[in-house]
Structure formats: C-alpha cells, structure tokens
Length: 429
Image (cartoon, rainbow, N blue to C red; front, side, top):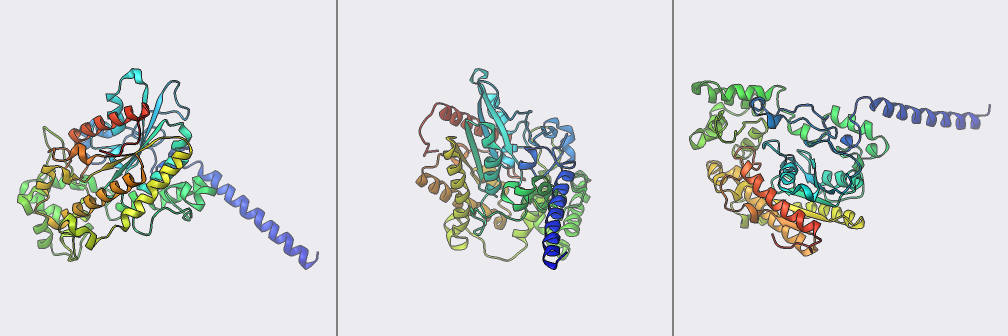
C-alpha cells in the first residue's frame, strides 16, 4: 500500500472511530439523563420531593414533587389538550415559587373559570436568566403549540452582564443545550456535563455551601438564644469569610436588634422565613467591603450605567422576534424588587449598603420598561400592582409572599383574558 493510500485510510478510519466514539458517548449518556423536554429546560434532575430547608418537612406544599419535565407542575402533554388555550409561563423562582403553596401558574389557573379551558404551564426554573428563557422558549415552548407565552423578568437578578447580550454564536457547553455546540450535537452529553460538573448558575451559587447547610442552619437558628448568634457567626466564618474577624461578622448580623436572625425563628402562625446559605454572601459582600454604592436611584447612572439594561433587552427583543415569526403573542411581566413593599424597606434599613442594590435594580427596571414601550413589545409593569402595599414580599429571600403572589396572579389573569380576547398591545401597567 502506498504512503498516500495509507494516509487516506488512516484519516478515514480515524474519522469513523471518532464519530463512533461520540455516538457511543451520547447513547451511554441517555441512560443517565432525563428525557426530553426536561433535559432541555432544567440542569437538575426531576425530584420526587424537593426540600429547600429542614422546616419545609412540616409544610407539605413546599415539598411538591416535580413532574416528569422537572417542573413544579401537574403532568403535561406535548400535544395541546383538545379545546385548551395554552399559556406558558417562563421565568425563574418567581414563577416556580417554592415558598408559596402554589406556583404562580397554578395560582392563576385556580382563578380561571373551568369553562375557559386555560392551561397555565409552568416553565419556571430557579437561578436562570433571559438567555436561558430564550432557549427554553425556542427549543421547547414553541413545540407545545402555545397560544401565548408569558415572560417574567425579575429586576433583582435577571439583568445580564454588559458583554452577555444576544448573540447567534453558541457557547461550547451551556445549561441550555440549544445555546451550546455540544448541546446541538450531543444534547444528552451536554446535560450530563453541566449537571456533573456543576456548570449551571444554580450549582455555582452553592459552591461554598456545605452538603448539609440547610440542616446546620436550622439547628443553629433553633438553638438556645445564648448560642444562636455564636453558631451562626461560626458558620459564616467557616464557610464564607475565614479571614474576617468574628466580631465584625457578629456586628453586621446583629444590627436592628438581631432581626436578621430572629425573623427566621420557627413561626406557629403566618409565613415562615428561612435563613439560607446564599443569604450570607449577599449580605456580607456588600456590608463588609469598601466600594462605592449608589445612594439613590438618581445616583445609579453615575455608578452603574445602563449597559446591563441593553444586554437584557436584547434577549427579550430576540424572544419577541422569535414568537412573532410564529404568530404567538408574547407578554413580558416586569417583576420589581421588594423595595415596593414598605415592610421590606423597613426591615433592611440597618444594612444600607446591601439595600443599595435595590436602587440599582429599581432604576434598571424603569429603563427596561421604557425600552419595551418604545419598541412596542407588549409588557406589564407589576410595580403598579404591588407599589406601596405592605406584606407583599418575603424579607429574607425577597420573593413574593402569599399576599403578593395573589395580587400578581389576579393581574396575570387579567392579562391572559386580554390576550385571549385579542386586545391590542399593552403599553400601560
């Protein structure tokens, strides 16, 4: 055999071997990953029971099982049920709403007349952002014959970094398979890589947390009063800030007559607040460091600018174009920070640096609303629904309370009725 023939044969054999290897990896991965569409939407496995903290065991509504799609929802079908009007709710933990008895779609569904046959489908996945929303809609939602898509943008953590605006170029690996080269070629393998290597935002946010953090914090909170603060301070120093003096940690946590710790004590009545690991990073990173913060909404442009608004808007605009081409109505709901709730504002007064994030997000929220209005993208600003009403937000995790979710569900129901009736683009709240 000539050298040329050997080279051709070797190259061809190498290509065949590489392809066979990749196909084999993808086939093997299928034994370890959820079925579609779960693997296209959620980097975590569907859980038969998902507990967020030890005290949830006594509150069954917070231990709802996921459906086979990995959503906090009843079982759904790919084909739309006969006669149903299907609305798909896309967003993060505000849609999923694990801190209330019902997810937001379920609360809206509960408010609709059975004769209307509205099917409110939950596509809310915690710790995801507008980029993930776009691919969740493009790769899954549009295949479910939706009559409308409702997109929820939370001001607190949905604004994209300036360099992460809409782009047609995929990443190598991503929690959204449709946004990754590996995901396009080997979607099961992509899910497995993201899940096992903790590459999704949800996993990265818990990187410093010990495996049993929820049990440790619940035990600390329910310990005798004279031990409580000492145990919490020790936890923070051990797992978050080993170089920070304990006195400094204790000073920050004890402000406002120890309200940061006392609010998480087990309650016999009312809504239970929880002390979770990620809250320490949020609080301490602002209060214990020396960097310039915005002192008011007017100060935001000087300190932060609006590049994050533009990057976020680019993904919403791309989603709008995607759905317009398919004739599916889109309604964007802008979810404000807890700063619309007077009780939330009062609770956070002892920590002005941490609270300054609210100024930034409130200003960005208003700028995004203006951009959507200018572009004619249908949207609902939920600030008008929640502004000035006490008790609508939980203090610690910043999500809606049952009262807040109820008000929002009423407003969403009204928007669904408008969409179903073919009402024109909504520009006002």
